[in-house]
Amino acid sequence: DAGVIQSPRHEVTEMGQEVTLRCKPISGHDYLFWYRQTMMRGLELLIYFNNNVPIDDSGMPEDRFSAKMPNASFSTLKIQPSEPRDSAVYFCATRRTGVGEQYFGPGTRLTVT
Amino acid sequence: KNEVEQSPQNLTAQEGEFITINCSYSVGISALHWLQQHPGGGIVSLFMLSSGKKKHGRLIATINIQEKHSSLHITASHPRDSAVYICAVGRTSYDKVIFGPGTSLSVIP
Image 1 (cartoon, one colour):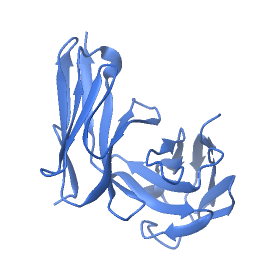
Image 2: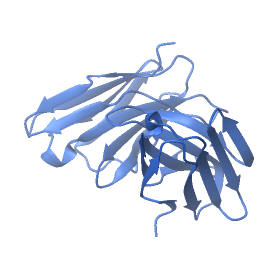
Image 3: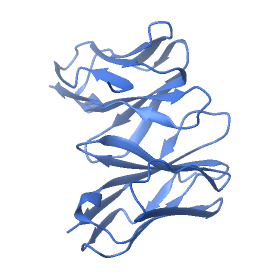
Image 4: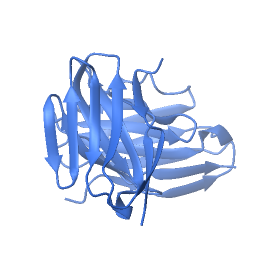
């Protein structure tokens, strides 16, 4: 299995631009988590899905952030408009029901200038 | 007070030393995870445990549910063990995990 796939691996954009991060979960994993990691705040959960349905989005910082999971093979995290404080590494992780261990993607390093 | 705390925050050790990283938490949990993150790298799950002890190679993880405490031990440490080690807890009846702040370990040859 290829593991959790994220794209792009690096993204540099200007303030105000729309940013879309993508995640392909491991086949058969029915939970998908989006995390953000910064030096100041460490790892934070933004949102998670179960069977493509958003379960908890209380970690989404504000309305500029949105996430979708149109099918079991794909999820997106969108920031519109982006701001410099959104600069961070964004991780996607997935797991299977009944198995607590999460598998992390390689992350997307986002820089907003 | 953070729900998950780790100590020490930073740790430097000589190659070959026995290392202990501690994690304490204040919430009810269904499981505790230890994760490893190398500099500039991704995150790898090392252990998931809800009781007792688990061992994988030179790594040992223990948990004491009553005391709400877990330890990660590394025996015969090696420079390639240099990484950030993160403790995370899965709360009872919830699917999401709460992360500790991480312990940055540097093993010097």
